[in-house]
Image (cartoon, rainbow, N blue to C red; front, side, top):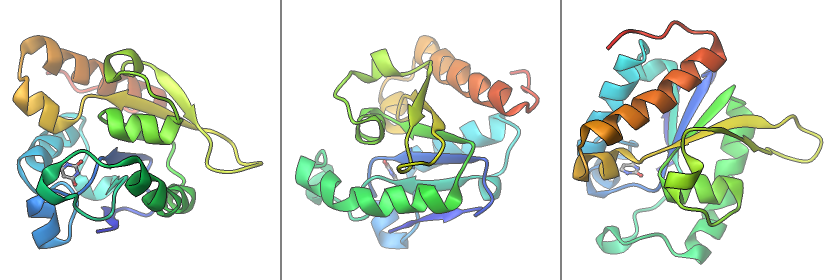
Length: 169
Ligand code: URA
């Protein structure tokens, strides 16, 4: 399941890997986590068609387990090429697996989120700004005002960086 969205997208959202619903439909983020991502995109004043949505893993890990390092390594060149071709202004890494895979580190999502990092698409290519935030599935499991506010803070930074209006909530 490669991903979908606008090839001229300014923002690329990168998740972890397809779940059962995504596997069935061959589209990213169409299950419960996807519905929450849709709401986040809408709250940002954007449409799903305006952005690009994909995952680190292109196939569903059995039983929704965490991706294994070798699975990430085998899918990463595909994702890197996608990001090189889409060339978004900002990448939003949804959750620890996406953030760590793209930034090549092992830090906790709580440490990574809330600030811009740099993603290097290739040698001699300008870095792309990357914002890490909580994965929508994590947010669904931990749906507190505090966590929701944190994700919204992260998305407001993305909008401000792009010079887009920040809708009031
Ligand atoms: N979770 C992900 O990380 N990606 C999807 O596409 C759906 C759920």
